[in-house]
Amino acid sequence: MPGMSAGNSLKPTIALVAGEASGDQLGAALINELRKRYPAAVFVGIGGERMRSVGMDSWWDSEELAVFGLFEVLSHFPRLYRIRRALRQRLLALRPDVFIGIDAPDFNLGLETVLKRKGIQTAHYVSPTVWAWREKRVKKIARAADLVLCLFPFEPAFYRGHGVSAAYVGHPMADQISADHDPASARRRLGMETQGTHIALLPGSRIGEVSRLAEPMIDAARILARQIPDIHFSAAMANSRVRVEFESTMKRLAVPNIRLVEGEPRSVIATADVVVLASGTATLEPLLVNRPMVVSYRLAPSSYHLAKSLKLVRTKFFSLPNILAEEALVPELIQDDANGPRMAKEVVQWLEDAGRRQAVQSHFSKLHEELRCNASARAALALEKLLQ
Image (tube, rainbow, N blue to C red; front, side):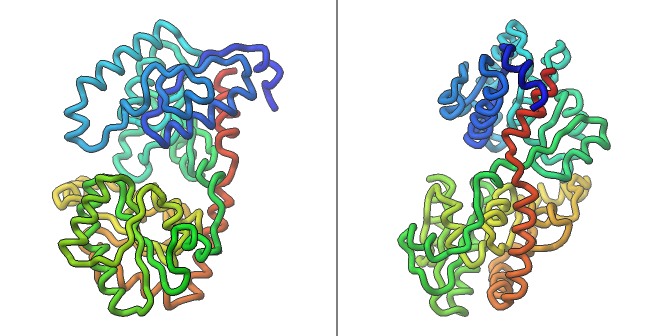
C-alpha cells in the first residue's frame, strides 16, 4: 500500500471529534485502520466508549455534543461554546498532524476553519447534505476542510464543482449489513408470529418528526388491519422519549395492535414485508436489508413553506434510495400526502405487485454492492495521502 513503509516509522498525532453514537462507531473503525498504517500514532480529541476502547485519549465524551433541536441547542450553547473554545486552544497548542471532524457539522466545521487557517490539515468525515438543501453551506465546508470523506458515490463530483477536494469511501453500514432474505427467522428472533403479513413502522428518532408522523402511520395501520386478514404491525422506537410519544398517540387513536420494539430498528425492518418510515438516513437500512418501503416526510407547515419559497431544497427526490438510483424506486409522501389513507394505499400496492417488489429488491442489491467498499480502510487511505 502506498506510504506503508514510511507510515510505520512515523508517529503522527491524529485528532478526532465525534459528536454522537454513530460518529463514535465511525471513529473507532477509522482509528483501527489508521493504526495499521501508523502503529505508533497518537489519537486524541472527543470520542465515545468505542473510540476510547481502541486507544483514543478522549478529552471529553462525545455524549457532551449529542444535542438535537433548535431549543435544546440554544439551552446548551454556553456549555458547548466553552468546550469548543477549550478544545480549540488545546489543539492549537498541540498542533496535530491532521484533525478529523466526524459528522456533527455545527460543532466541527467552525473548529476546522480555525485549525485550517492556522496551517493544520483538516478532514471532514461524512458530507453534510449540501447537495440536497442549503447548497450555500458548501462555501463554509471549503473554508473548513482540506478533504471531505464522502459516503455516497455522487458526492465527490458535487464538491469538485465547488473546488473542494473530496474522496468517495463508501458507506460503513453497507459493509456491516447483509441483505436478510428470511423474514421468518427475524420474526422468530423477536418472538413474533412467523406467518401472515408484517408491516414495520419507523416514525423517526426525533420528537418533532415523530409527533408529526405517528398519527398518520397509526391511522395507516388501522386502515390496513381492516383490509388485510392476519396482518401484524411492529414499530421501531429509537428511544424511550419516542416510545412515550408514539404510545400516547396509539392510545388516543385507540389502536392497540402495534408491537413496540425499542433499540432494534434493523431487526424490526428484517421482519417486514413492507417498511413505512420517516425520511432521512434511516431509509438506507431497509435498502441494505432489502425491503420495499414507503417514505414520508413532514415538516412544521411554516418551515415547509419557508423552504419552498426560498428554494432551499435542490433535489428531485428526498429519499436516499431514489437519490442513489436517480429514479423513483420507492414512493415518497411529502407534507399533506403523508397521511394514513395514502400510506395504506402505497403499502397495498407493494403487497399486490410481486414483480415490482422483485425489481426493486434487485435494484437495492446493486446499490448495496456500490456502497460496500470497505469504507474505513478507504477513508484511512485517503487520510494517509493527506498526511503525506
